[in-house]
Image 1 (cartoon, rainbow, N blue to C red):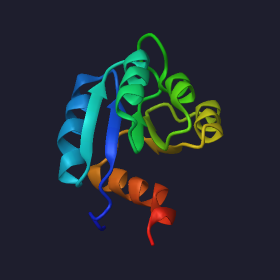
Image 2 (cartoon, one colour):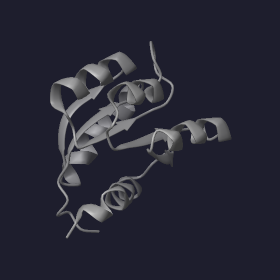
Image 3 (cartoon, rainbow, N blue to C red):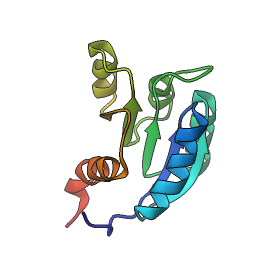
Length: 123
């Protein structure tokens, strides 16, 4: 996998371990972490403040789920990481134009999804 793709990323998850993982893995993959937040409302605020290239979000979070937050900041490229893999959740993800990754996720899986999402942008 190439590390030439360097993105500015905002990530959201209500689990502290996952937030810490985002903060550690994304720089190792060559990306800039603009913010790592724990709620949907914080995700919206961070996206408005930073205008990221990519958003990573969980689905179920306090105050507002990640998909409602994505809808509020669209259009933005996004990867939704979730343990909820039911058809309705996946349909909502795809309706937003986002990519779905089932949890748990390894760093190489996340980077592959990022590369696939931005594959058409490279010349």
